[in-house]
Length: 360
Image (cartoon, rainbow, N blue to C red; front, side, top):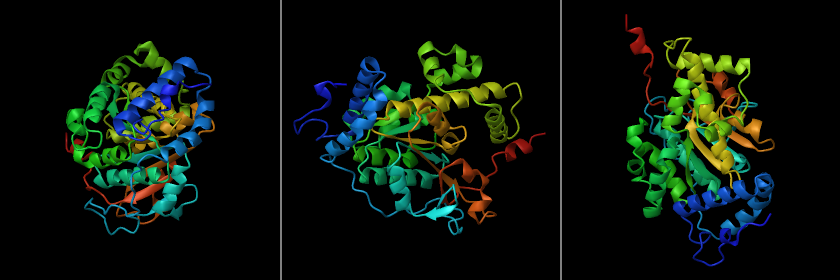
């Protein structure tokens, strides 16, 4: 396959020498559009061949200067818990260091970093991981669950004007209107990406698409969106039952049986779409920033990737708040859902279901 010469600028003013996030995002999009339109069957062969070439070329680019020093914990509760700050490999509960985790993750095609949305420590550690990956010479796209295609134009416009400034990005994409925790705790992630010249990519279905699925089901989606999602298989009975129970639990048992199928459809569709976004950026690798439920290997985004991209390697990392009554890694059954678990302090001890139990 021969790529257009425009993708390989030779002068020192080209994107490979003056790389910023806006240029990186634009170049990602141009290359992917060309590949899908002109050479759809050769994409994965190209990806395997081009990564070493890109790595060599990117060695001329300014790389984010990464420090091995970890950010200090700021979540106020359980900072003295014996597991805080420790990382375990779930396959054998072996403890590993942050630098070892970075080494392992840098060798994977996709790195998924699962969070509890309101814990600032999770976001500072996600930012640290992005810095660690780029220090290894990787140039992944950074895909965020919190952004969708409706925000892509605002995102690109902001990055063109402020390619190295994450502080105003939240306002530019109307972050607060989407119901996420304050942009200030997510800004370190964007800052790490922008300083390294990495593209930031919207990862979620649009709000309109999610509403269609929740009200009418996946068949009601526009055909192009539906076809992308249907590249993933449907869940088997065990996976469907597991998801249904998680939805009941996360909604404090207040979900009717009639509502569960559509809610499950939304979760499946969002994860399938996020997998598509990562695959769109597979030639350079991709990092996903998402809630921990989306990065579980048994039925989250990693599962969709495994079904659709055989041979691709994945690191699913979950940042997990410790619990006072659980001092050992073996006390956390959910750890088995991920490849690696990184324990952190807690933001609060609020019971999200308490307000429902107080109602008559």
